[in-house]
Structure formats: structure tokens, C-alpha cells
Amino acid sequence: MHAVRVTAFGAEDVLEYAELPDPEPAAGQVRVRLHAAGVNPADTYVRTGHYAFFTPELPYTPGFDGAGVVDAVGAGVVSVSPGDRVFVSSLGTPGFSGAYAELAVTAAADVRPLPGSLTFRQGAAIGVPCATAWRALFQKAALQPGETVLIHGASGGVGLPATQLARDAGATVIGTAGSPAGAELVRAAGAHHVLDHTSAGYLDELADLAPDVIVEMLADVNLGHDLEVVARYGRIVVVGSRGSLDFTPRLTMRKEATIHGTALWNATAAESAAALAAVAAKLGSGTLAPVVGDELPLREAAEAHRRVLAPGTRGKLVLVM
Image 1 (cartoon, rainbow, N blue to C red):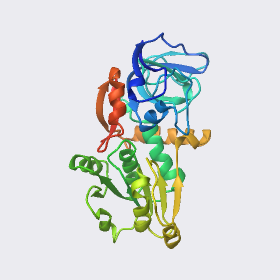
Image 2: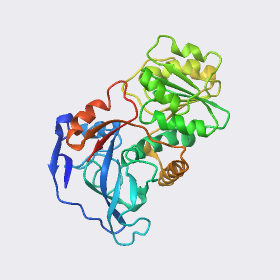
Image 3: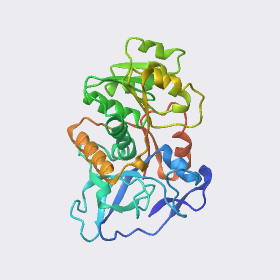
Image 4: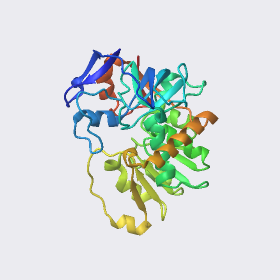
């Protein structure tokens, strides 16, 4: 099979397109012939060898999300069968062989049916983004019907499913985007209001609509401003940050606001299972409809790692086999 292999940590050029032996499923495992793999910002952090949550043993194949058809199952697996269309969500699962590959082996619990209404490319956009959105909104912020939620970076891989899920939960949804095309995606995902976060003073538009919950994708830029606009007793969930910032802690006192950090790596087994079950149910009902952005062939994984961190990313970036 063809796969992307990393033999040394470093910049994008350590991602090598190679031919590897087909992995074999052990007891309790499933082998999936992948049609597409999702690319997450976390993949780029892992590649450097300095990611706080996960450092794989070298050599390794990157990627946690994918979709395809079950190719073989190990002993004791009854949840899926060869020929089933599935999506894979295997964040840090021991024994996972990596999603940037034509074949991937993982635990049966990390493989779920892919609804027939979704393409394999959409299936590759489910795992990390949708589970992160669910965890941020419901496991951390405890979003309630009737509340108002602001989603910063709502046109991205996590932002779009967060928008869909918040709208479905009965919240008033405000999403931000940095381009007209991104804004249109956010509206289509169900946002009641869309703000251009490249415009000076864009948060002034929230003067009469203080959000109870803020889902923050770039805390090093926005957290101080979030504390200015969040409602009293509001909750801010930090999903992403790429640097440091200077802000006034007294702002948390004035609003009695709560700041939650979140990362799927910290979820308990029960929380992870609950999030994945909820996501699967929302996919089945049509509430969640993953949005795919750029598509690149597997051999261009290095370019995918450059693009996934670039400003203006819309939807989920995927590699196709």
C-alpha cells in the first residue's frame, strides 16, 4: 500500500510518500481501505515532535481521521463487517496505524457507520473536528437552549460543525469569518448572525447581543476581547491558540466569566465514547453535514500541512487516495 511516513520529526518535508506493507488487524481491530483522510492542525504539531499531548514513536504514519470501506476484521469484531462504509476517528488510540494511508488498522470502537448520504471526503471531516465541537459546546460549556453562542473562526473545520450543532441545540448562533465565501458557509451552516473578523471593531455589533458561550479558535488574538463582550456568568471555551497574550484578569471578575481550556486528548474514555456516539447520531439525523474545503492527493501531504495552518481556511482539508 501507499502511505505517508515520518522517520524524523521536523518541518513539512519530513512527510515522505512511500510504499509500505499492508497492516494486518489483530483481535478487536478493523482494517479500512481509506478513500480520504482528514488533515487537522494537530497533525502538524505532532509532526514537529514537540506537541504537548502526543509524541508517536518513529517511524509513524500521521492522521487520526479517515473514511472508506471495511477491508478485514480481527477476531471478536462484530460491530462492522467487510464491505461496510465507515468513518474512522482514532485520536491517539494504541495500535492505530495512521490515516494518511490507503489501508489503516484501528480499534473497532473507533470505526462507525458512514451514512449513505455522505461522501467519503465528508467522512474524513468528522472525527477530530466534530468531536471537538461537541466537547466544547456540551461537555465543557454546557450550552443550553435559548442561550447565545459566539463561534470565532466559524468557517473552519471545527467552527462549521460547532455552528450546526449549536443551531440544532436551540441556541442563537453568531459566527465569524474572514472572507465573503467563508461568511456564506457560516450562514449555510445555520448561523443567525455572521461577523467579519477582519474588520476593525467588528465585535461592537454585539452590543445588544452578549454571548453566553464563546467558542474560541485563536485565543492568543481574541481572548481579551472575548472577555469584554461575553455575558455575565458566561463561559469561554478555548479550542485553539498559537501564541501568548497580555490581558487584564480583572475582566474575568467583572463578568464572573469562566474560561475553559479543552483538548480531546484530555477526554475520559466515557467522554470520548459519548461524544462520538452523539456525533454519529447527529450525522444520521442530518443535523451534521461535514463541509470539505481543499482536497489534495495523498502524495501532497506536505502541502496539506502548509495549507491547514494558513489564514482563511474554509471547511475541512482532506487528502484523497
